[in-house]
Image 1 (cartoon, rainbow, N blue to C red):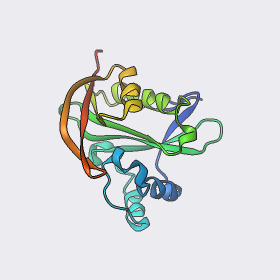
Image 2 (tube, rainbow, N blue to C red; image 1 turned 135 degrees about the vertical axis):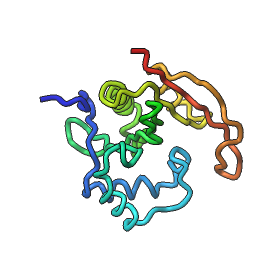
Image 3 (cartoon, rainbow, N blue to C red; image 1 turned 90 degrees about the horizontal axis):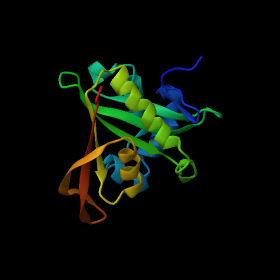
Length: 177
């Protein structure tokens, strides 16, 4: 039986205690800190506490983080999030990271993003999603615009990284249904 969060390449699932090492590796990979606005390393202790509270639903936590898993092997290859969930205004931010280069540009991120967009609009009845992406992250900008996200603004000098300020693009997708 196929679930709502099942695609041909990937499926999305709730986080499990066994994801500790995977999340620890992603959260402490300085090469991708600029994507998540992380500035300091996370301890296994803090991530374990986070996982212990991962049972909270999106209405309580205001966030939903899911593991992206390869459909064939079951291997966890990334994370995808809804954040700043606002049920009153029916909106949330969305972000994605695929950990290893060999799993990128294979359609995994595209399918994972489609699954979560469909879930957000169909099951959570959101009216809009937004994303914040560094202006030089062309791959992510192209990924999001593929699904109809529109650039609605540029936040000047928004992120300080590598000893300089960088602009960040604000993208928005409004559910037309």
